[in-house]
Image 1 (tube, one colour):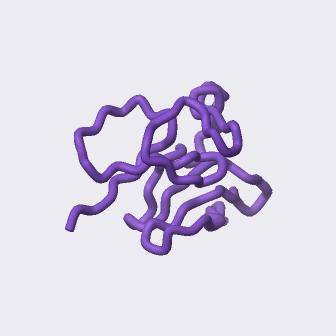
Image 2 (spheres, rainbow, N blue to C red):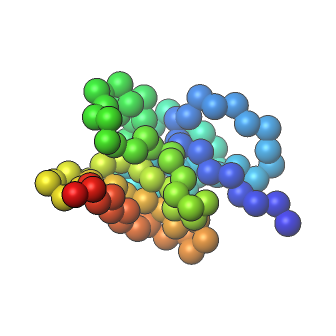
Length: 102
């Protein structure tokens, strides 16, 4: 059984695999083909990535525990950052919360 590899929609990474899915980092919609802009929510990875990153933020496309795929930042506060995410095993959108150390 071939495992699906997930890449950010708009990713410039070249991959040679039969089982590739592209995920919008803005809405977590899954696509079979790579587009620059999400046809569902209009999210543009290249435009988002051109913004200045804060060092504590995870990059879009980061995989956590080989189970969760991290998307854009939904909110940030004194205790941590919340991202939109995708649970690869269940195939559903989730909220990924990163807590800052005390």
